[in-house]
Image 1: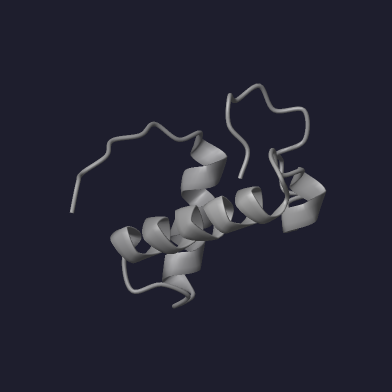
Image 2: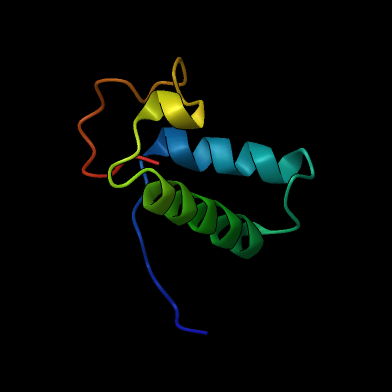
Length: 71
């Protein structure tokens, strides 16, 4: 499997860690694979850029954020 290195804002890192701590995922690799796969499916089924409200991220510190990507 190819390896990919990314830099994440602190708030996304904390949210992923929280999901792992709650037992939603076994480890970081599983979390990233599942979350990226879900994002790609949402993107493809939505015909393009996914709005934050569509994936339930409103109120989570993502609105008006200057990052180049949105999950």
